[in-house]
Image (cartoon, one colour):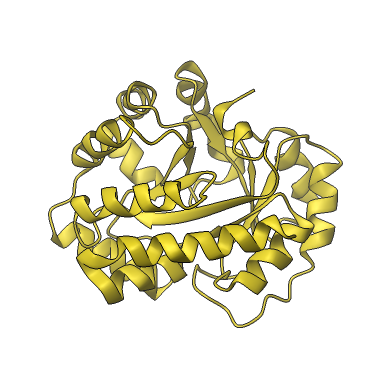
Length: 258
């Protein structure tokens, strides 16, 4: 069983997303530890990119703040190496194909293996082009996590059959960000996916409240939240860790009741 699968082995999973380096790497480390201590089952770490096409204004702002602060991929690798001294939950990088390309895919993925990163999400990588990274991912034991969007329709079965780690189901069209309500028929997407894969399905994009998280976990195996956490970081800055920890606890409690 991949390490990522263990995140879903204890029931419904809560997965927070944190942009590395916003407002600085020391705060990122404190927030990751607070999330892990308060029930996060898996943590997505965003490697900032100057043109994050899948992101709404909240996470775009976090990317720009982190880059302005001098964050680099190497500094993030060093951060994760330090976190791995005591953080045991699975960690997944979320970034863009260009970040991996410019670093060198083989070098990037061997570094992931060395520091203990379990998976990679590239939202701008079309399913049909994943072979550009898949061999290096497999050689280094890093799950290349596939995304399914509401527009995937007849491709859901195909993507699900080849999915690794967990299947990231995008709740709604457009970019990341909190939404007052999620209207997509996610249950039918999950049903199709589960007919073709045994790996867990987690829903992300637009989830911000415990009620939404619980509703998403009721139809899938877990809920992913990013923008709501980034808003806490933007508001509290270097003092954000306890606030993020309390938020993660409330969300984990909610999905556990799904």
